[in-house]
Image (cartoon, rainbow, N blue to C red; front, top):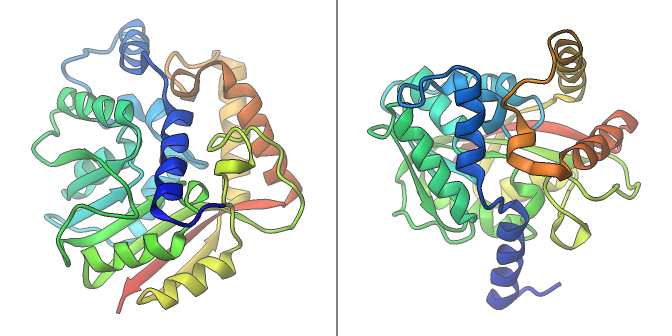
Amino acid sequence: RAKGSGGVMDMEAQVARHYMHGALERSILDALAAAGKDLDRLTAADLAGVDEFHLGWRASTVALAQDLQLAQGQRVLDIGSGIGGPARYMAEAHGCQVTGIDLTEEFVAVATALTRRCGLAHRVSFRLGSGLALPFPDGSFDAATLIHVGMNIERKDLLFREVRRVLKPGGRFGVYDVMRMEEAPLPYPMPWAADAATSFVEPPATYRTLLGESGFAVEQEVNLREFVLARWQEMRAEAASRGQPLLSLRNLVGPAFEERFSNVLRALQAGNIAPIQMIARAI
């Protein structure tokens, strides 16, 4: 695996291509219109089915924001912000000023457009860029989040050092990633990677070590495996009784959704991986 800047840039280009859809905004707007939503007066909740691209979905975003103790007016950085679900939630529910950054150009464009339709453009903005070279001055943010992003980043040491640089002393960093619990091989494709070439799933101990070496004190670590499996069963039961929702992660992922999500659920049920939330404080 290449370690130089060229290798990192090539890896990031592969990751960005993995998430490219091509007609994502139209797919989302068509589904919202079919559901009877006013496309010019959307709320973050209207979009929750499609813009929470992580295990636990909206409920895990709510829990992470709560555990970060977010407060009115705080500046928050969401690294790997996707189409903006968590960023909009943090702005709407906690009154934060949120900046999202993502490698995928289409995600940044769709996140910006949806945020404008939610009336949140004055509090939430998105930029194209890399978590390994954050385009922000030192000490710019009160808090940062990394939600199901670290699995695509080999150089987590560089990432965590960059996050520490842009956080104020005492600022909190909320990590919510899929982490490896057993050495068993993972079934691909996964939601975050088509194969092992762009998948870097590490155990919690690696995160703890690298966070500590980067100037963080880990204050909380929670395994959300049971929570996620229970929520998944609830969603399946809802779909069985009411039918599949018009707007869901199928709109985001496309035809590959079923295979990718059945693979991740299988590995989760087997205990080979788990969604782990960590809260670390910049020291």
